[in-house]
Length: 427
Image (cartoon, rainbow, N blue to C red; front, side):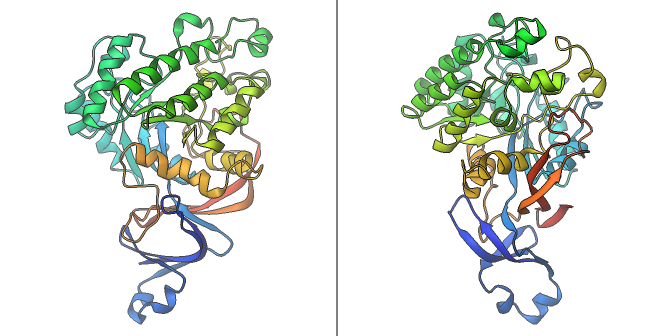
């Protein structure tokens, strides 16, 4: 047994909030209350590890539904084991992997291989399967078979699906299966050089860059199809004010519309690409201050209901290439919660309960996962956080180090991560 006492418990599902004790037995929360220790038997106390969480927040483990662990095919960047350790350090107890691996997760065999390796880690590793074979946007995968084999959703993340008819068929199938489908919204026909916003940043590098229209034109198309089909969709890593407003309006017409913001998009602007170079190159790119503020407002009013990292590891050699040749993406699992606390909580935009709702319960709920909440009888996936503590990131448990946040002092320290009732990370 494990007793977490004196902590400030936050459950985003029920709204429970206050100084309480949490008793864990096996992989389940047995009790939550004010005097749990006093009501335990002598035998229970003798067989119980006690953690004093005074002046700390006790919250559900985070659920990150946009993660790249690069296995199979690109394990020099990251693998399921190293990615899981990075997740645990960041307070993430459940991840949903993207399917743009090599081979792609467009078949049952590869899907089962990924899930089997995930079971060897100390956290919960789920995965999406592809919408189309080989992420080519031409032929739909056997979604029903993949769902039965354990896929929790579908996406061709990394590559937009340009065939509107195929998008409609995929949404109709996902609606039938009651499973979410997630979209990477960037029209390649409008992009000259990806990863850099068309504006101040592209002018600095003397390149064409990626215009905002590349995102919001596809967002508009897919929101309309989602409203018509009733599919549960996730507009991934939203980056423009226009897309935020489109989601806001679409949510008034359809209850299954979701959108996610990444910490880099609510923290940085295109100026960061000028300062950090390829370490701040990502798809979709960092935009303007007006876009950043629109994303924060979307998080505040619930238009954007998910925070996800798009954890995208790359090797130092790859990121050392020129801006037009280096791959897009940054790592994010270890810095996500501190960035949310620093940029959203400490600056008065979101409460801690709202942060955990967007980083744990809402993403778990969209994917129909039993995670992201604290309740008696519920899963013992718990984090203990010093919300006032500061830390400087100089090294990572991820295999990769491609982050513009290296050297930043951030508020919020994950002190312990508990998954399945076991401590899987402690600072």
